[in-house]
Structures are given as structure tokens and as C-alpha cells.
Image (cartoon, rainbow, N blue to C red; front, side, top):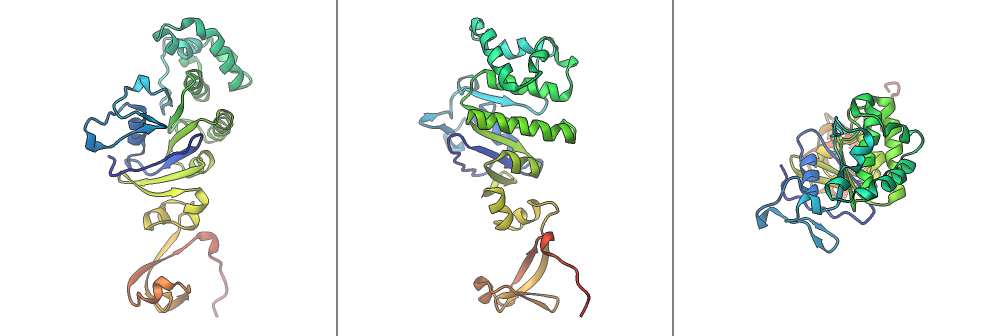
Length: 275
């Protein structure tokens, strides 16, 4: 699922991993979390600062993860969901204080959710509880696995703003997996574009949009995507069915007759009367 992936994330940075279904983005998240272990030395390494996480168990990595399906315990009300980590580690005396602090962080109305079980909560409310459960553990890394895909468009937009506000407040390193370009643009300081288990390009959304590394990125990033028109290189430009587009590109000067693709963004196209 992952093929030669090499990625450095800065301390406090939010990285959005963007790609189509089956590209390996969720697998990468699970490797970081320790849910998928790298057993053989030649499978790679996971490092956090000076710590080697490669053989470290998931419970020792101090990560907070929010899943697509929320993964709340259905028989527990929200407060017990938040406090379950501390119960398992025999630190139950910390629960009340931690939950109170996180409730204030999560904003108005969150305390009213604490006495309700997941089945009594809407999708957006369950997501808020799942995020709060992630925060209450005071993790070193936040991991989000397409956390908004089950919400409607309006609620998704509002929840996205809430998550971004919290991330800026905590300034904790974050890996955010999504197939939604708008979400990636909003949540990531930088974006990783993946295909078939490989990283195709890494950069800000603007860098990727303006200078795609290859045809996959050019056709994937952007809504609507870039128009890709087959042509032939020559004289610093591209010939498309007898129409020459002068680009003054040096790499095209020495590629006369070679097949190339001309990429045109939709906003750069305008209609005019035929001459």
C-alpha cells in the first residue's frame, strides 16, 4: 500500500494527505499511529523528534486519533468516553478536571453532551465528542482519518472551522487524511498528494495548483480540474492540431516534435468571436 514514502513534518505543522480512494493515505496514518506495525527493518522507520517509534506499541506513541466512523463506545455516555483512557491507565482521579478543561475548549453547548450516549447524539455532536476524546489525552500528535465525510455539507463546513481553530490553539503536529480538496486546502499548512502508495507532490495548495509536478497532480488538484490537451512540442511552444501556442519555454525548444500535453486551467479560458 505504501511504496518508498519519505515525509518530514515540521513541529506544530498541519499536513493534509490528499488522494483518491485506495492511494494509501489511510494506511500511512495507521502506520504513524502504530495500528500497522513495520516488522522488518527494510520496511522503513517512524521517528518523532529524537524518538524511534518504529517498534513502539500504539499505546506508547501518545497519539490522538479521530476515525471516520467516530468509534465511540455506544454503551457509555460522552463523559465516560472521554475518561476511558484514564480509567484504563488507573488515573481516574484526573477525569473530572480534564473533562472540564476540554469542555471549555470545545465551545458553547459541549457540556450538555456529556450525559448523553452516542445514539442520542447527531453526527456532528458525535464528531465533537470524538475530537474531545482525542484532545483530552493531551497527545503529541493529532491524527484525523477523513473525520468529516459522514456529515452533511453545511455541518462539514462548520466543523472544519472548529477543528482548525482548535489546531491553531494547540499548535500540535497534525496529520489530516482526506479525499476532499477543499478540506485539504482549509486544514493543511502543506498538502501531500498521493497516488498508488507514492507521494506525487508536497507543497502548499497554491504551489501544487500553480506548478503541478506531473499529469496526475494536474488533473487531480483543482475543481474543476485542469484541461489537458495533447500536442507536440516545438519552437518553445506547443502545437495542437495546427494551432501553435507560444509558451517561450526553454525545455520545449529542444523537444521538437515530441508528444506533450498542454495544461490550461478553466479560469484561464475565455470565449471570443471567431476571427
